[in-house]
Length: 417
Image 1: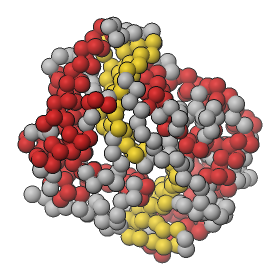
Image 2 (image 1 turned 45 degrees about the vertical axis):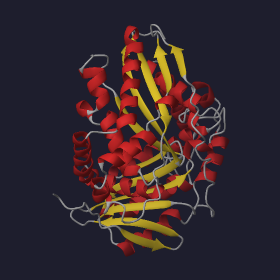
Image 3 (image 1 turned 90 degrees about the horizontal axis):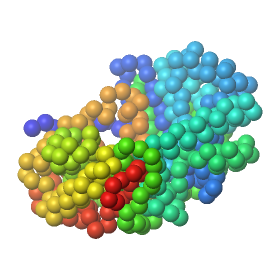
Image 4 (image 1 turned 180 degrees about the vertical axis):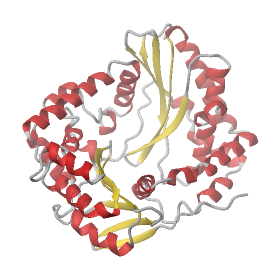
């Protein structure tokens, strides 16, 4: 039996900012990631996409560099710099050679403190965002996702399209984008993670250079996830030969003490490819779909269990019936000993694959911090998974999987629904 996977995480203090670091000098590369709570959750109802557009503008020129010059500077120094606005967080990060670290810091700082918002760049970003929003709704999958989340959380940012709609994006102003960034990019409340060829003292010295020019204070926290609305079943008419189905129910938070057991249960239900119960019952045995899975979305401090598949319009009712039966059976009896062993073996064996390069390591460290994981969480994960017994998995399956609360969205032209 293999030993626990461990990761040598160091805590680096730089004034009010704390960073987690995995130091590795085997290659001269550094990855740095930072995050604040907020993101698309800051968009007002009817103004969805404001933060997404504002985030995109950060790489469209800053300081004395227009969009072309800014991108040339990144390319010339082989720097990968990115910003993203998630549903409940804003994230920035870069990856570069150690020699290019001063230039990466300069460009990242410029982007956050002096974005240009030139008119042609704004309209280019707007056109791209509108095209993307329209493209999402051209497929049953996009229509189903939009309708599912809107019905599950009708009065909360989790229910709104984080990238915006064609209508809301058309109304986003430069003033609104500047205000969104001013509220989001602050000196306080930031989480930082780093990996690669950088020593703790060097990391501590560069953080004030990166963040010190931002306004003081911390961004306000987004609203917590409200109770899931078990809305029953809804059909979104979409002209298509197939329907997209999304099924969901309340989940658990990342801090739940049953987190590992829940991962085992969800692996058995729909996360194990052809070994999962849903794939076996819905595809292999009946040929109702090409693929089906299930997983847990952790957002706004809570969680939502979802499953999705596409099938012929005439077979939607049958596929739904089979999926719900599998859901109910696992909730009633839990995994078998063989299923438990396979799930634990996969979850423990795949863990090191998350740490194959500095970018992935930094991203994982940042996710751990956002989920309030303790510093030694990874060190004990293997043993916590191996400690999950069949009775424990059965108890968690019964508590986690709630077939009576399943909400269903079908986008297409289903027959008999």
